[in-house]
Structure formats: C-alpha cells, structure tokens
Picture 1: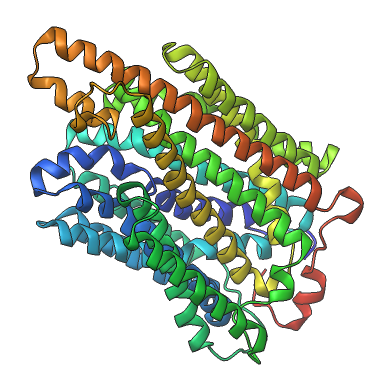
Picture 2 (picture 1 turned 45 degrees about the horizontal axis):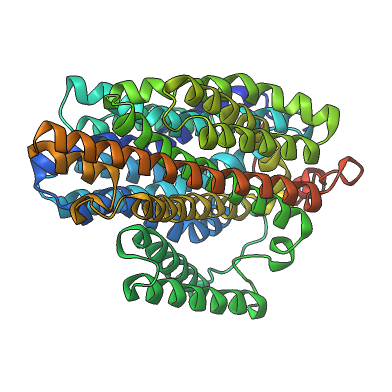
Length: 509
C-alpha cells in the first residue's frame, strides 16, 4: 500500500469536514454570550460554563475515547461521536434554561472526544509516509481555520438569526460528515485484541477533569482559591495514580515507553506551547478589537481574517519546507515566527489602531501554519499505526491542556496587570476588567466617564503588552524545545506501516 488508499484525498475531505465542525465550536459561542445572557437570564459563572463545559468534558474523555477507537474501530467511534455531537447541538439550540445549555455543551464534548482522535488516526492508515505530511498539513489548517473563523461565523449568524443558530450550524455539517464517513472511510483498528482498562478509564477521566476544572476556574476565582487548588491538585494526584496503573497493568491504556520517548515529548511539548501562546494571544486580541477599537462582534471576526489567510497560505507550504530543511527546523521556525507576531501585538498594537494588530496576526498565522503539520506528523509517527487512536487522543489532550492553560494564565496576567496599572481613584467596580469599566461609565457624566475610561484603556494597553509578551516568550520557548527534543533529519521518524499492515489492519483498498 505504498501509494495509500485509492480514495485517500476524498477521505481527507470528509475527515476535514468532521474536524471543522468541532474546531468551530471551540470559539463560535463566545460572540453569542451577551445575547444568551439576556435571553436566558444567565449569570457570569453560567456563561463561563456555557463555554467551558465543552472543553472540560472533551479533554477529560479523550484518552478513553482514543483507546476505544483503537480497540473497537476508528470508523465506528467516529460515527458514534458525530451522531452524539449532532444530537447534542440540536438540543442546545432549543434550550430554555442555562443548565440545559451547559448539559448540551458537555454532551457535545463527549461526542467530540470520540470523533476527534479518529480523524487524525485514520489519516495515518490511508496515506503513505510520503504523502502523510501534506495530508496532516491540510487537516491542521482546517482545524486552525475552524477556531479562527468561529467568531466570524457566530457574528454573521447572530446578525440574521437567534442565538440558537450557532448550535444549529453544526447539524447539517454533521449530517454530511456522517454520510461521507459511512460511505467512503475505511475501518481500521488495533489487530491485537485488548481488554478494556476500566481502572485506567476512570482514573484518566477523573484526573483530566479535575485538572481542567481547576485551570478553567482560575481566571474568575483566583489561583489561590480552594475551588481551584483542590480540583487541580486532586486531579494531578489522580493522574499520578493513572500513570502508576499504566506502568503496572498487563494491558495498559497507554504505552508509557512511547509517551516518554524523546520524539513524543518533543512534539507534544511543542504543541502545548503552541496552543498556549495561540489561544492566550487570541483571548487578549479579541478584547482589544471589541473593547478598545470598538469593533462589533462581526467586525471583530472580520478583523481576524489576516490570521486565517496566513494559515491558508502557509499550511500547504509546510510539508515542502519540512522536506527541504527538516521537520525540526521547520517547527522551530514556525514557533519563532509566531513569537515575532506576538511581540508585534505586545509592543506595537496597544493604543496604535488596527494596522499593527493585522501585521501581528499575519505573522502569528504564518508561523502556526508552518509548524502545525510537521509537529503533528512527528507526533503521529512516534508509534505504530495500531496505536494511532491513542496517539491522536494524546495529541488532542495536549492541545486542549495547552489551550486551557493559555486562556487561564494569560487571562490572569492580563487581569492582574490591568488592575495594578489603574490609578487608585478608579472605583472598585472598574478594576477587574475593561469590559466592566465600559459598563460602569455608562451612567456617569460625560467628562468623568470619559476620563475614567481613558485610564482603563491605558491600563488595558499595559496589560496587553505584558500578557502578549508572555505569549511571545512561551512561543519562543516552544521553538527551543522543538530544536532540542525533536529528532533531526538524520533521525527521521519511523514509518511503522510496513510492520503493522501484515498483522491484520482492516483498511480495504
């Protein structure tokens, strides 16, 4: 199967459609939150869980879902996950109470966790080693585009429909993906029948859930709060027990030798730093566009098009660059370019209008597009194809952790720097965020309100500089990790396909 599956490019298109819908859902809901707050009577904490219930459940179940995918069949789990995701989206669209939205988002996370690992692991089986980098590049570009275009699509829908349209958007895409997967995607699974690791399943889900709950709660409750520290530290303890279980079990869920190999650690560490800097930076830029530059939600979405355009241009070029100079150098170059873009956003964009922001977004997108494909290829090449579901799940888990920590840490840095930069005369109700300050000055006399809002804008500019500088340093650290840990060209990632196929992989021609 040197040339791969004869319908591999059509399979890629179907898998990209599936991953596009789940990546959109990472960000599309953000622009609908103010409307949902008014129409559902949701408070600040409920709004937070509208967004975070999805991430929490998704990351908590991913390792279990990846193991099930290898054991029972990747196509089967992909179909199950898509169906659950579509049904949950429909339920969320017609929710009448805040708790119903939270429940629907959690159920969407369950569905997403079962079909996300399948998309990438199936690519490993249907593409040859020579074409796999190009395929993963396109897959990664679609994933990134979904996250970037989510706010824009949400803004367009809200201008013409009710808030539930951001959920309804998923349903036709899921139906098309289900038809495509059922018709064209081949089945594959681990040829060695393994027993389910029930203790490992419980420990991994509880541990990841605890860590994510603590991290997600940190920006609103504070890192020293018991509501943050107890689940965070408890989750870390449970994860330690999970790894102990994996080290001693006869048929573990994860291969720890693979997980702690230099290749996997280098690729996963790089991916974590990449997602930390990307999502942390996007968290700040979104506020700058709407609260400082006074863009509407739809205009703010349009303002991020340079980021999406740069990803579209650089992603297809990434495999050719990696072939010419090696994956390690390409990944490090991509992270360094991201760092340069974040530095522009840190030191030139605050208080300077939109053009410097656009330049920073272009560099950020170009660097991301350059790095994502080779880092995913390196990670997925760290083990044999029969473990691709678990490898893909670990990859997705690392991305979710990096994203969650990026928003939580950068959100905390921004809030702390903003509060410290405000004059002591600013009222307490304006000291937590620029959004609160903008709301607080509405009923004040024009002169007093304008003066206070100017002070809040200056404080936000200070906070943006500091938080974006942290993002830039994180991306640069990711480049260093990639250069030091990812094997060079002479230590190319092994393609285990030849060794694995005779053992019974079910991938029909």
